[in-house]
Length: 94
Image 1 (cartoon, rainbow, N blue to C red):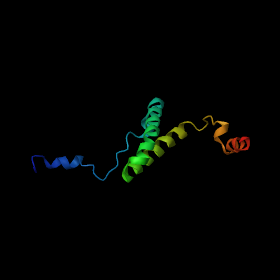
Image 2: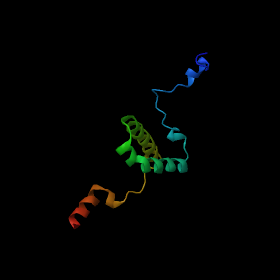
Image 3: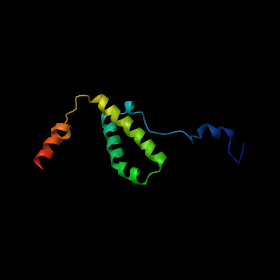
Image 4: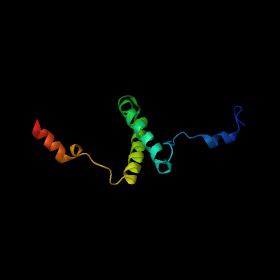
């Protein structure tokens, strides 16, 4: 025992490891959407004010969540205006 704490406390020392949340594959569809909404909402602040480590973890988590969403929804509806062709049409109108 050191400093009043048993040595087994070392088992819970997670410094140097990344805690990224629940594996996206374990989330149901509603939970996955909630996680995606949250991470997209916090993106701007993390980019502007987060440490490099915070931004790296945010990037990794966002990629995990978005990848799972795309895996589950391979035939999602894509808005015509969000394609390259749609962007070209918008530019031609201007």
